[in-house]
Length: 248
Image (tube, rainbow, N blue to C red):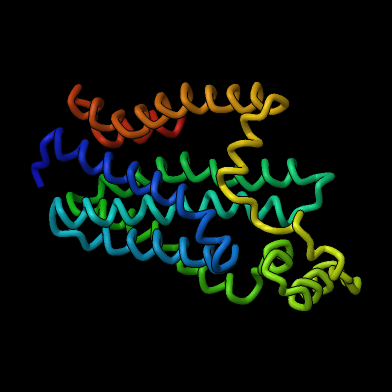
């Protein structure tokens, strides 16, 4: 398409804006309609937008589709983490969260290997990679069958009987959650949450975590976003860039 460096930057920029919006809205929407519905909706959004990206015919279409993909991707990550917190037992919750996101991190080198194999097939072969990105349609369909709604969310919406049924299906033990329908199970207003985060007992931990993300994420995002462009300008092939990404 003979895109300029500025246009490549705009594509990366709108994707980042999409992830920002998806991250902000994911948790809020899941509080309204439920964790399961939001997770499935996010999978559908980023899968379909990825497939459509494979049919993109110009700068504006890929610009819009990357923006939509960012919304679905970030929303999915945020709500999935929330879902895991609510569904896993506290004694080994951290272990299973780490395993889930470790498997997710494997996607990076896998995508790099796929890039190296596919890009060399021809000038339009990049479209195949976007079609592969649409494979999320499969777990979207399976999610209707085996994914359970969060009992904690159901209790917060006074759907006690439905929550008890799901807990019994998971554990095999009859559950009585009638005493859980109290203020502690309800959604906390966002301003109250911020107040608690920056209260004296939590202030230090909150600022440490914020500082880590402020320092680490810009470096990570900059490398991930601009490395292929910089390598290309220096005369490296896309296969060389993919090889480097595998080791990263």
